[in-house]
Image 1 (tube, rainbow, N blue to C red):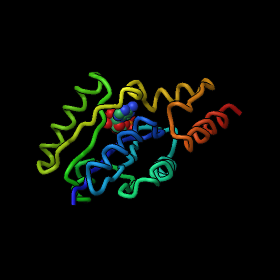
Image 2 (cartoon, protein in one colour):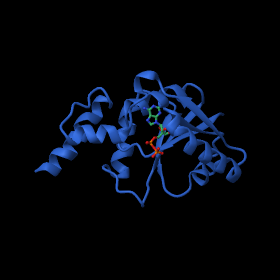
Image 3 (tube, rainbow, N blue to C red):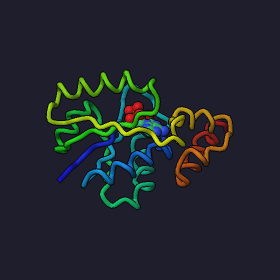
Image 4 (cartoon, protein in one colour):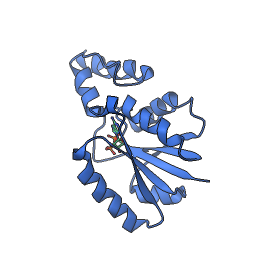
Length: 162
Ligand code: ADP
């Protein structure tokens, strides 16, 4: 059974992330979406909120499981006996960091390879940060995030404006 993990912050999940999830779920038998609980960052959404949003927007894909993790990705990957780590590449700006990360992970866990999926052109510019910036200034984010996520993001900013 081929198993992979797609890790990230997903704060919040965007259509770019969902595209990578849908495409990588076709390449493996089981895909774990790993939501990083990073204590060093203050995310807009708690890890439980991010996990719940991802579960909701991936419920149409039967071989996807959404889990949170903290600490080292390779440890989480080893625990779940995955064969591969999936990462999305948008532009050359992603490349240098992603390459260093994948090489580090390969040293730490030689049996696990990192597989890069290129972004679909329509989402090449899209990031969670851009979505948050748009929402902060009341911009329309409906072309950037799954429908279920639109209100969740807007609620955060409306609540903080009150
Ligand atoms: P991280 O904090 O680990 O970079 P993100 O949640 O920002 O987490 O992204 C998770 C993964 O998804 C990364 O590999 C990132 O390059 C990829 N990704 C993010 N946005 C897109 C997009 N629009 N198209 C393709 N891949 C993307």
